[in-house]
Length: 178
Image (cartoon, rainbow, N blue to C red; front, side, top):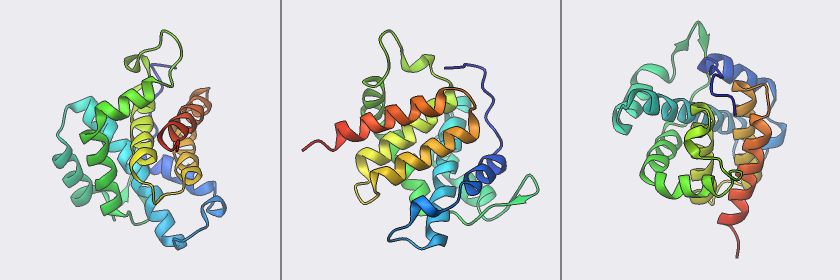
């Protein structure tokens, strides 16, 4: 994984995700609700990344997103409305269950790889995705995996999206074995 991958802006990443369309996400949620979940997942990745880079606390970051980022223009672009409850659950859950989530991720790394070796953005994507796959049984696995792979594609052009896809697929299988 490239250590020097620069994360795209939140607005750029959202534009890339929306360009992919909603066709894969049909189901029980309306189009507006699906878009709100997409924004929430993307924002959760951004929040986890921000927390790692700045050592900010979970509640202060959630409050910042709620008060200053959601429902506002981002870099001149207006984002769709977020599902703020879903966003808060993702961020709080990934932080509260980080030891469990990190174990799930590490179990999917290659021989000799350590979590710390991954790019910080990739770690944030994997942590949000792994937490959702393990703890949000109401979300179809393929929807969650697809969303996080699309987020990875918005930030990375190399092998990272494929790696994230394989890791999340394995985490989903491990978490949902009967």
